[in-house]
Image (cartoon, rainbow, N blue to C red; front, side, top):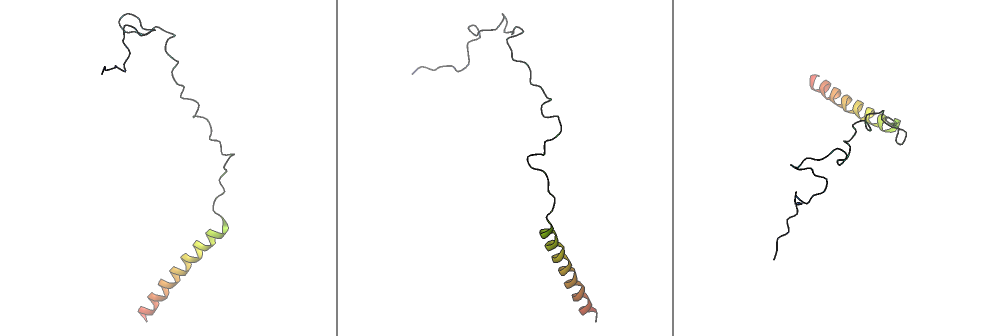
Length: 78
């Protein structure tokens, strides 16, 4: 069984100058960091905030729990 080296042989690799340098134009341009820097697009999923139903339920439950503890405290005092 023969072993095949996955790394290319530097002597046979195209685009390399003597000593292993790469001439200009052989490498791809660097990535730009600007595409994601603009304003965020929210047209596809605009924020809607809290719906009235769940907000009323949460506030109502909070008032009921607070009233329970207030009544319990008053019963313990008197």
